[in-house]
Length: 236
Ligand SMILES: Nc1nc2c(ncn2[C@@H]2O[C@H](COP(=O)(O)OP(=O)(O)OP(=O)(O)O)[C@@H](O)[C@H]2O)c(=O)[nH]1
Image (cartoon, rainbow, N blue to C red; front, top):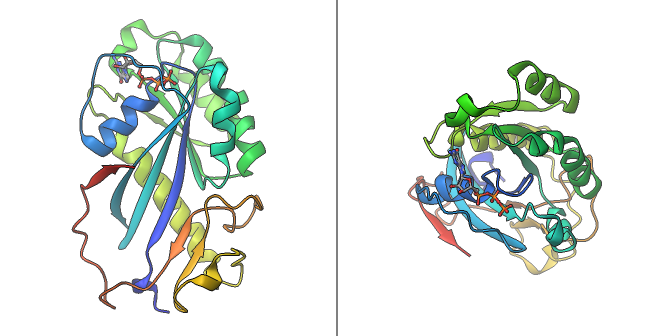
């Protein structure tokens, strides 16, 4: 199978305290809209967007989890199989900054070490900031993650968060692209040239990419797909 015939789908979870802007970020990225209204996420929601990264089509499935503790039991299960993570806190909410460590642990427990970006959102409100830049950088270093400062409201740096994660996952995928790590019980039912690793498979390992949604299949046209869906999103 040639490299240009593959399609990659990545499951990305967005975590962080309630009200930091997780839903807004996904809406902004997938639909290009921003709303001032705060509507608490109940459980889990997801949107997707297709982009081209390093010459490859990547389908990003963005899982919006509720930040409120009362939904913990529901959301935890949805981390499973995620291949990348956005860990968000708000410039104006000290608790959300201090909760970053425990969010990281929560994701690690379910997914192992996956590419993660620490997002400091609401930088349009820097005048009301309750965190200083040095401590934020220290946090990112301590967690071993890239730090990106965003304003979903102003549409600042939102796209770079997802582009960075997709690029990192692709690089890791290329490193392991001999495909001999396929373990999905479902792949027997697929076209012989089609390889699917289910995002929802209960078995997972933290090191390899056999724990998530990596869908590798030949293009319908047997040539590199045009990126016609670049800005297309849909609610599933
Ligand atoms: N000023 C400003 N407000 C923002 C920004 N991003 C989100 N908000 C606002 O912050 C509030 C909370 O945003 P949500 O996206 O609902 O937060 P959430 O993290 O999904 O919250 P939960 O669903 O409870 O987990 C909303 O009123 C948004 O309009 C931003 O970059 N700047």
